[in-house]
Structure formats: structure tokens, C-alpha cells
Image 1 (tube, rainbow, N blue to C red):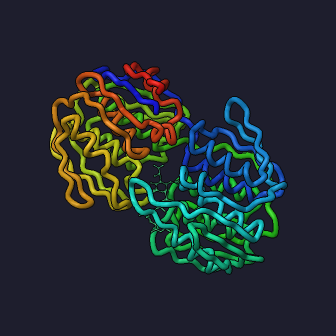
Image 2: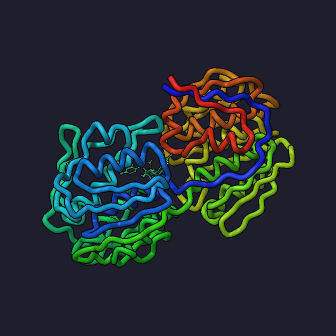
Length: 419
Ligand code: EPZ
């Protein structure tokens, strides 16, 4: 298992390019199952999760041609199997995103039930409930979701909870269903909006993406389309925290500052100087120690749960005491015990962490447990005294493209140890 060896203490400085958003590319790749001709998807990040999704589509008979820049030509006209097998789904729970499109296009789907993961049970009951309301017959047995629907019909769906992939699955199913679907209490994340943009360019009728009510009128068929994946707002936020935690100055290119207003507001509260342009963000910490900031995660446009672990690392060395409330997932403080091994002063009480900032963290051997927790350990290591060894970094490779190369470009002392 690869490891990252990081020597802390260098303020980051320089420019880095932000990759396409993993959490937009995954539903967008799944949506190509809906098209009866070729799709061309660009700005796809080169990540393990993307490779897994492409393998999953390939197993179904989708033809994929990928160039060296990860521009992907996708043809789903020859799909012969509507199965998402356990051995692939267990490595990437976002495989559930093929359920809606398979059902809508081919009338059947057999998708392994994605188990829980480190951060929570993560049920998919709301995906299933919505598809049943649209006329699907769904059995969950032997660890598989078996769904059948000769023809889905539109429905009025009031989501009990805001679910990002649940909203995305139901949007894709509705795009080929018979009639109108209204999704109320829909997720408003930018990745949902990016998926809607693709569906519309495929000929779908979708209104209201980005609000809590989305209206879709189904079409008999959808055609292929060209689409450029939007920038990754969580990768952007992670690199901005890296600049803030090390007291440095970093400029992000090929990003979109309007995708992470809540994160930028919190970074300003830490004392960071932030300037933005159409497709760039610059953070200058001017060598100062960050001030502690309270965090309360909630669905977009509020502060994203995917940035909580990164701000835990920042607060671990900030000036003051911070309270972080995690309201989306029930177990998303796995990074805390690893940060404590580096000397962080963190008290967990239920879904709340109280962090008293230390002037200095100590390097230590630590272990990544999930994607964003691994990012927080890397951030802490960038500012810890000494050399930190981060183990199980396959977690980080799922969501960050070439992270050690990008951090090295910014002056970090980091290298990958292949084992
Ligand atoms: C998406 O996961 C993201 N993944 C997650 O990013 C992100 O943390 C999460 O949204 C919240 O923003 C992708 O987009 C691929 P949810 P998703 O359904 O859709 C409960 C990362 O780090 N729920 O919005 O799985 C659920 O348990 C990953 O890139 C149900 O109870 O999250 C959770 O408490 C981690 N039943 C809450 O809703 C359901 O049927 C929100 O989950 C669905 C969800």
C-alpha cells in the first residue's frame, strides 16, 4: 500500500490547476447510459473512482475511448448487461448512480447494494422509494437491488432528506420517464446543476436545478452530447486550506469561486486575504497563524460536509477554540483520533467536535480512513514539526488527482513511497 512521507514547516507558495469535479463526473458518466448516440465528456479528473465507473460501464457493454487528457468518448448503444456487480460497487458506492439510467433506458437494473462506509451507514432507501413511485418494481435480496420497469412514469417526489446522488438518480430516471416529475426538497449542489446541464444538452427538459424544486418532463429518447465537467470545489477548498494552514500564498486556476462561497467566507474569518476572478482564487495568509473558526455542515449552499475534516486540521493549529458540528453523516470524525496522535486537542461529543488550537503539531505515523479524512492528515502533516508518514493513501487517490505532484509544485516537502 502506498504511503505519503511529508516534512512539515514550509509555507506553500505558487499556482496550481484545479481538476474537474469527481462528484460531477460520476453522475455525468452514468447519465451517458441514457443516450442513444455518442457523448464526449471533457475535463474528467484522473481518479480511481472515475476508473472504477468506466470499468463498470465497460462491463455493461458501453464503449469508452479515453485520450491522454482524460477526454472520454462514450457510446452506450451496445449495452448488453444491466448489472453493477458487488466486486466493483464495494469499491465505489457511487456506482448506485447507474440504477436510475439503466432502469429508464433498458427497463431493468441489478445493482449491488452499496454497503456503508467509514463515515456512515449511507442507505439508499430514498433512491429506491423515488423509483418505486415512478412505477419500478424493486426487490432487495442477496445484497442486490433488482429493479424492473417496462416504462417509468412521472411522479411528484417529496424527498424526506436532501440527498445528492438520490436527486441525481431520480433526475436521470425522470429524463426518459413518461410524463412530468417534480422533485421537491431536491439537493442544490453545483454537481446536480452540472448533471442537469448535460441532460438538457442531450435533449431532456429539466427546470429548477440548483433550487430545491426540480421539474423534469420525460422524453422518448435522448441523444449524445458534448460536456465539460465543472471544476472541483472540494479540491479547491482543500488547497486553499493548505495555503491557510501553512501561512502561505496560493493561486488556484481553472476553478470557479462561486461554487464555494461558504468555504471562502470561513477562510476569510481565519484571517486569510482572498481575491477572486472568473476562473481563479488567490489566498494570501501573509505568514500569519489562522484564527479558529466554528463550522456547521449542512446541504449546499451551506458549509459542505466534505470540507469539515480539512477545517478540523486547520483548527487544530489555529489561534483559539472552535466548535465543529457535523449534521450530514453520523461518523465523520475518524480523522480526529489520527490528528490527536499528532498532538491535536480535540474533544468529540456526539456530532460535535471541540478543537483547541495548538501552536505546533508533532509529526507521527498516521492512517487514512476515508477520502476527506486522508486530506486532513496531509494538511496537518504540512504544518507539523518533523516527518509524517500517512498510510492507506488509496483513500486519497480516490478523490485527489496527483496530490503529491500538485503540493510539490507549491513547495511542499512530500513524496510517495510505493509498497
Ligand atoms: C454525495 O454523497 C457525495 N458523493 C459525498 O461526497 C458528499 O459527502 C455527500 O453527497 C453530501 O454532500 C457523491 O456525490 C458521489 P447524500 P451521497 O445522499 O449522495 C442520508 C466525497 O467525499 N441518505 O446526500 O451518498 C445519508 O445517509 C463524498 O466526495 C439516506 O438516509 O450523500 C446522509 O446522512 C463523501 N437515504 C444524508 O442522507 C438515502 O437514500 C446525505 O447523503 C440517501 C441518503
